Structure formats: structure tokens, C-alpha cells
Amino acid sequence: MEETPSKVELAVQMTCQSCVDAVKSSLDGVQGIKSVSINLAQEQVIVESTLPTAEIQDLIEATGRRVVIKGQGTATTSHLGAAVVQLELPGPVMGVIRMVQATQDSCVIDGTIDGLTPHGKHGLNIHEYGDLSQACNSCGDHYNPMSARHGGPLDAERHAGDLGNVTAEANGRARFRIVDNRIKVWDVIGRSMVVHSREDDLGKGNMQTSAVDGNSGPGIACGIIARASGLFENEKKICQCDGVSLWNERDVPSAGPSRSQYAQPQQSQL
Image 1 (spheres, rainbow, N blue to C red):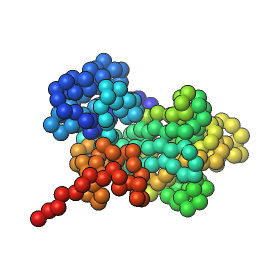
Image 2 (tube, rainbow, N blue to C red; image 1 turned 90 degrees about the vertical axis):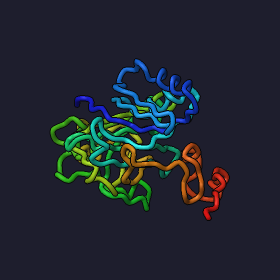
Image 3 (cartoon, one colour; image 1 turned 90 degrees about the horizontal axis):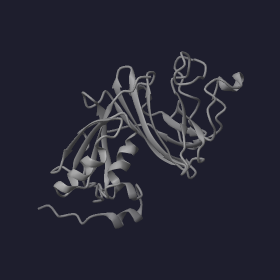
Image 4 (spheres, rainbow, N blue to C red; image 1 turned 60 degrees about the vertical axis):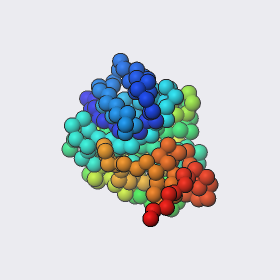
């Protein structure tokens, strides 16, 4: 499918013009990056590209600056729908996947998954239910509203939730960007995303089992698809509930007593 550019809004720790110059230099001339906008006062960088967001984040962080993803959208509008999935359960594999409905017929699925088999391929699918009560076992079958056979993402007949495979690098990390013409973000909010233990055969293997799950084995990490911020919709710098700053947010537990050590003192309001 033809590449569809999208925009990502990044919060980047910048204090001076040399910071701006370093960030701009890290992105200049990189294939797949269409445009870059930097606002020093707001510590904001907007990048339009066809690259996985994790690659953009790595390029900027190589300059020594902290980067946090705040929102995604399309090249012309904020978004037609945005979602995020935090993959975890039941073991060491974990990741974050973001979805943006770029057009009525184009959904950008952008993610990073860690802890996979090095150099291995793993099936990635949207499943029917957002039920993690039994980890990935309670997510149901592939999302398949048209009762189609299992297939690959480019096949004429496939489950709507068939996203194909992601491939891990030598360090067990898979970084990917998929543009899909079947998924509609508004149809999958509340369902689940599952990464599987083996390569999906894309409907080309044993036809009896491939019609169900692509012979990709059990789910090794899963998460519920939730609504997310688009461009300029996330203004948070400090969590109002406990004072954890934007820059520390990704390094701390989402809840529990160990989170409090990262909180900033709250000023009393008179």
C-alpha cells in the first residue's frame, strides 16, 4: 500500500537555540521525513514523516535530549480518530502501539515491541474482545466482522484484524509502521491488540487452522485499544493527580507507592 505520511507531536527538552539546532540537524536529510517544525518556547517538535515514531524519537534522543510522544495526526488535520495500546501481560514482552485514522480508508499503525525473539517474526492481530481477565487467552478470535477467511494484510479476503507480522531486530525490538485500509479506529476502540509467539502464515499454511489464527501460536503480549490524543490535544506537563512530570512519566510505574519518588512538590493554591 502507498505510504501515507502522518505527523507526530513530540515534547523535547530544549533550553536554547543550540538545542534547536541539534534537533534540526539530527532530522535533516533523513529519508522518510517530510517536514520538521520546532518551537523552543513550548519545547515542541512536529515531524511529518513515513517513519516509525520510535525511529524519530531515537534520532532526537541521540543528541542527548529527552523526548516524549504527545500526539499524532495526519498531514492536514489533527486526526479522524486516534488510539493507543499498551502491550503487556502475561510475560516479559511489552510495547506501545499507536493508531491514527489518516483518512476514511487509511489507518496508520505505529509501534515498538520489546522482548521478542531476536530476528524473529511474530503475528500481530486485533482481536474481538478487550478482556484481559485470562491474559491473551480471553481476547477472543481475530476481529472479523465480515466472517472472512484469515489472510495477509494485502489480501482481498482477510480478517479485518489481520495485520501480518512484525520482525524483531537483534536486540529483540520490533519497530514498525503499518498503513492499513481495513481498520477504522472507531470500530476497534475497546477491543484488543495481540502479538503472538510465532510467525503468522498469512493464510498460506495449513488451511484448516490458518482460517482461524494463521498458525501463529499463543499470544505473548496483549492490551486494550484505548482512545488517545491527537495533535495539540495533550497539554500535560505535570500529572495533576500526583505531580509526576512529563519527562519522568515513561520511566515510572503507572500506579503504586514507588511512583511517588518521582513526584514534584505541589504548590498550594490560595
